[in-house]
Image (cartoon, rainbow, N blue to C red; front, side, top):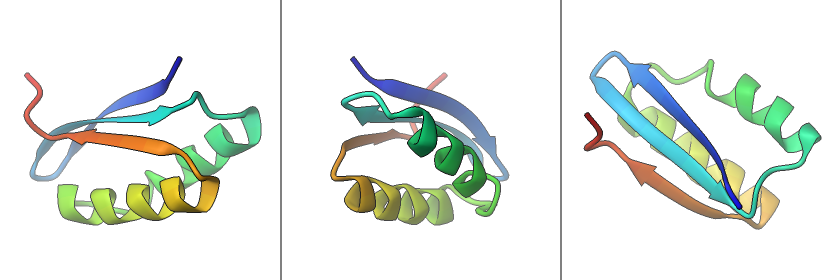
Length: 65
């Protein structure tokens, strides 16, 4: 099972997914983290840092329709 979000950044849409699914505390932190970046590159760095911090697998897809 995974936790995923689809987001619209200034430079396009992205889908981010974490495996296994996040805890309630991690999800709360995730929502705070996605508010900071404004571009896909900034978001990717933020999500990579979060995944590393949580010891989670992470998928970042910027080619969504």
